[in-house]
Image 1 (cartoon, rainbow, N blue to C red):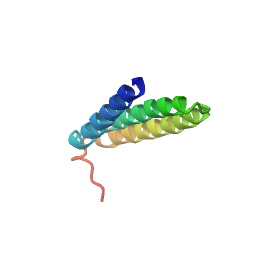
Image 2 (image 1 turned 90 degrees about the vertical axis):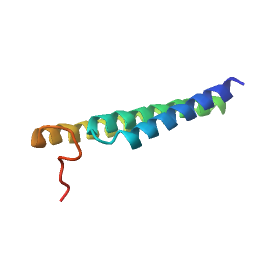
Image 3 (image 1 turned 90 degrees about the horizontal axis):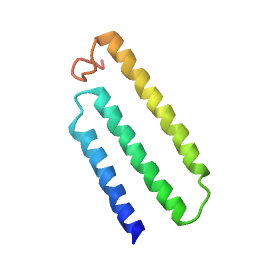
Length: 96
């Protein structure tokens, strides 16, 4: 019963993160924060699922390492965009 409630919480967190990612795409910082929220919800789901099947939680450490690398890469893109353009609006960033 408790696992069902946790899975419902995970689904709600994942849907909220995706809605923020889709609807708030004007600033790069908000997009990066929503991606980190999605990563945390997936981490929460993996922790529940691996605990439920009594599997080793070593894969969570690998997942966290990759999510930290993703976060650092996003922050470096944000810093370089702010240094070159002065803000983090996608509309002022020309991809051509």
